[in-house]
Amino acid sequence: MAQKLNLDPNDIEEAQRVDQEKPDDTKPKNVLVTLRSKSARSSWMLVNKENKITNNEVYDNGSEKRIYINEDLPKYKRQLLWMVRNQLEPKGFQYIWAQNGKILVKKNSDEKKIYNIRSEVDLKKIDECK
Image (cartoon, rainbow, N blue to C red; front, side, top):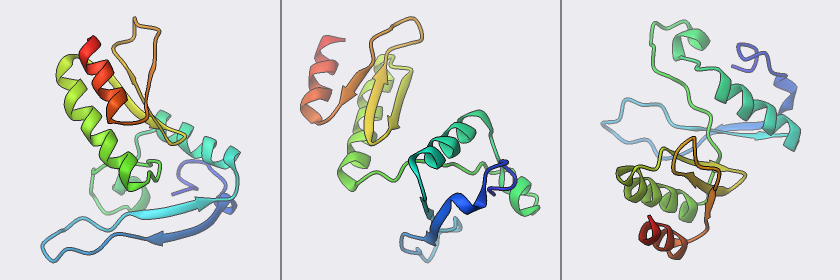
């Protein structure tokens, strides 16, 4: 995959499959990749943002399912991100993302203010204001 994205495979320190296999799940388990440096991490995340890569491009298997590169968030942050999306997307927030372990939201491209959601308290404050 690194070669397909024109990234240095030597930036990868470790890669392993994680999560539990479910008997009726056809999706493969996630791959957790540890990179050697913050600059390598930045490169991977930037390339991911600019390129939409599919299974077929990497494995030549005919599958057009997209391969996603996401941050590995702690369980609390993952749950909080899910909660933020469920509460704010219906209220018109177009941009909800995780970056460097932070959950960030922005109403739309015209608004300059970016909110950092650290807890459910922050979410309630934003939810009440908008």
